[in-house]
Every structure is written in structure tokens, then in C-alpha cells.
Amino acid sequence: MKTDEFITRILPLKDNLLRVAYRITGNAERSEQIVQDVMLKVWGERAAWIVIEDIPSYCLMVTRNMALDTINLQRKRTESFTVR
Image: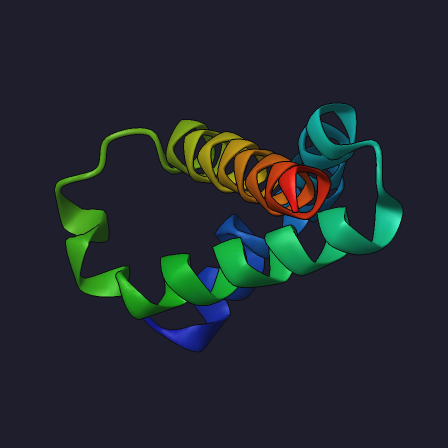
């Protein structure tokens, strides 16, 4: 995949990805960071796009998973501070 294909296929998904991340995290800054990480991950895996049939669904799945991972990590950190 080339840069122009990334710009036309992936970047337009940014607003939807932000909404998904925000719905899960409830934090705008964290959501923006998650979407940036998703964009980097998708760009890094551009060779695999040939086998991925539905790129928008893949991006949404990655965003959801990263947001959930972020929430779980935050909970663990909060619990460890509470216990001490």
C-alpha cells in the first residue's frame, strides 16, 4: 500500500474511530492517542491489507481492542494504588 491509498482509505475513518474510542474511554485525549496508535499500527501492517477484506471493520476492531486494553490497564493501575 502506498501513502495515497492510506490517505484515501484509512484517514477518512478517523472521526468514526474517535467516536468509538471516546465511547469506551470517556476521555478525549486518551481517545485521540488510541486513534493515533491505530493509524500507526494499520500503516505498519499495510502489507497484510491484501488479505484483509474489510479494512474499515478491521480498523474499528483494532480501535475497540486498544480502547478496552487502555481501560483495563487504567483499572489495574488504580487498583494497585488503592490496595497500597
